[in-house]
Amino acid sequence: MTDLNTAELFEHVETTWDDEIIPQLIDYIRIPNKSPLFDADWEAHGYMEQAVTLMTDWARRQPVAGMSLEVVRLPGRTPLIFIEVAGSGSETVMLYGHLDKQPEMTGWAEHLGPWKPVIENNRLFGRGGADDGYAIFASLTAIAALQAQGIPHARCVLIIEACEESGSDDLPYYVDHLADRIGAPSLVVCLDSGCGDYRRLWSTTSLRGMLSGDLRVDVLREGVHSGDASGVVPSSFRVLRQLLERIEDADTGEVRLPALHAPVPEQRIEQARHTAQVMGEQVSRRFPFVQGMAAAASEPVDLVLARSWKPTISVTGVDGMPPLASAGNVLRPYTTVKLSVRLPPTVDAEAASAALKAELERDPPYGATVSFDLHEFANGWEAPPLADWLKDAVDRASARYFGEPAAYNGEGGSIPFMGMLGEKFPDAQFLITGVLGPNSNAHGPNEFLDIPTGKRLTACVADVLATHVGVFG
Picture 1 (cartoon, rainbow, N blue to C red):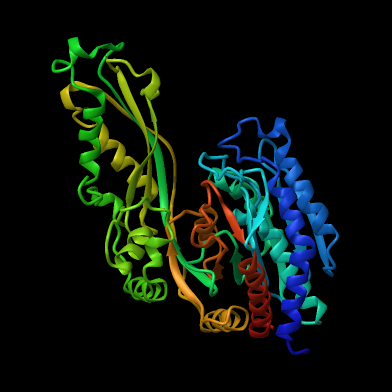
Picture 2: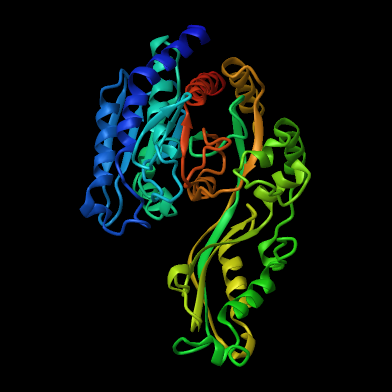
């Protein structure tokens, strides 16, 4: 067996990124292929198909021996790119990514935009490059870099879905449809997560669950003069504030419903302490606070745990309120807000949804009409205990290509795919990582991919694949 030449491997990765991956990502960012949740006519618009074609055309040109590629299409569902690469031994590694995108969002810098790729200071701005259009390019490049040196790897299966930003609704059907071809992976690599900084390889230990829905309060059949009705008719907004106070302490942000809480394992508390030491004030400073604004807690470890193991409730949208320019002296008939609730990794999202709905709709103040219309829910995920070989491989790869030891962190977002894969492959090990670090702002304005991190991460994946086949043969 040939020994891995890490310098040669990184040179291969860096050259591929510079010559091929970055140009491909530039073209990919220009495609407004919003996920079906945000573009009901996605199929007619054809943008998703453009993204699939861009990626598959590139993949077919790569010098990867033993590769077969198919775009799998189930009726009425988004397409899925399925790639198999033959390897050594009997083990299988699954590598996952997605190609659908979040919507535009407002607030982009004047010279930037969601579909306008711009490179500044080694960062590629635009929607979807980091979340996570780079995944297919990085995965195949990692495999090609090993093959270029004659380094063996296990059989690899790549799955690139087109529905992740809509909750991965289509993915279970494809996993079942492809079950025989997928097999039982002993390692799952997901490149759709985040990183606490750009100085090391980060491995995600947990993901929060989520639920979302619309809370509506109706007090009148039509709007009336506020001078005539206020003091007699309770404001729909005040009633809504009362309802929100049932489920969240407005002073502390603490969620009141026991069904939305879960105990934090001691191992995760210890990892949170280490993450807080590594990141320090960057735990909060990486967010674009306005001048004078403080974080929800002063201790970094409390903030780490708050975004990974505690429930939170956010209002992300509102209806029933006119714009300021056209807001007259009228007592409005109703107020609706969209609630986005993040759940601890081990909370049953369906049970939490039922508990939240019951609490919001019971005994409405003043007899107002109150409804909570649930849109979606998804369970979180907690990683299985990390095998010694994988921990050693991750630490070694991080030291080789980043120059720092690896770090472990629970992520505040949701990747529904992970919970499903965890259930289907309970014996698999998981390397969940990504390039979404400080200020990269996935889903928001000015989203970017840090290019040096993408290169180093690609090399780390290759290194871990080489270790994996050495362990399992």
